[in-house]
Length: 276
Ligand code: AMP
Ligand code: MN
Ligand code: MN
Ligand code: MN
Image (cartoon, rainbow, N blue to C red; front, side, top):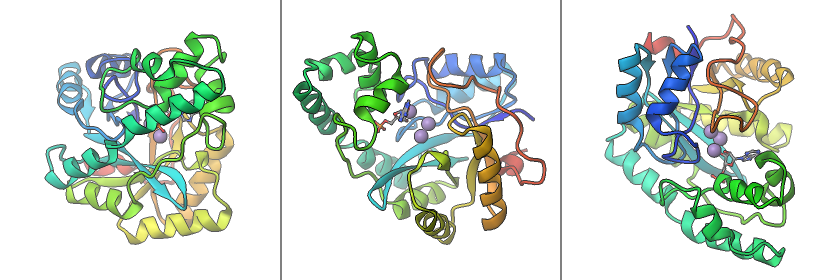
């Protein structure tokens, strides 16, 4: 089983259409796939039909932006019904505010001498409801302000950097509730990316379990091999199921290709067992 349960398309901040991501996943050897666009499920039907045409199993997915203890956490929902009204309304409210935030980011960048970032980022956007920092990053790279999108986050758009604009996303309670009401399983995405203290991490994982969250990503394109081991241990300690996903966004961007990560440690329970 080569499961890749986290990646993006042009429906959010990826650069390939859902059907193209499906083809790339299949070419990369993926046998069980989920497209998990940020705060949006508009790509699910296309992703599923292309996956099935290729003979790949498909699980519906989404990645919800959450604010917890004043920082952003991403919660992946797998096996959701994308037409569930609570989920649809929740995602709508989560997307709301991205446009105003993008204007504020553009203003912050203008103060640094980078003009026209809003319009520049928009040129990279396919879904106007889903303008994200990634689109700004691509614009800044294009204009030569940074060498790569990772470099943009390091210098301008990461938390606390001069172009960063704080934003309030969904609550953890709401995000997990929407996923569960839509019949899905909630998964903490790439925990190694969050800058919490050990105590905050334990509180986050405890609350997530209490809310009915089930799994964490252990093997993800956002983790180093040391973090695969670290979060495998967290999964054992809290009794979480484990997930695996590249977090693929675009060819040549980021560390990982679809389907190419190492397998989960064999003693962990894969979150996908329920869909086999
Ligand atoms: P937003 O939802 O607008 O805050 O944008 C978040 C997106 O920015 C993430 O989903 C990633 O695609 C991208 N991102 C965040 N941090 C980094 C980073 N350090 N390097 C590259 N991409 C990043
Ligand atoms: Mn992204
Ligand atoms: Mn994420
Ligand atoms: Mn992602």
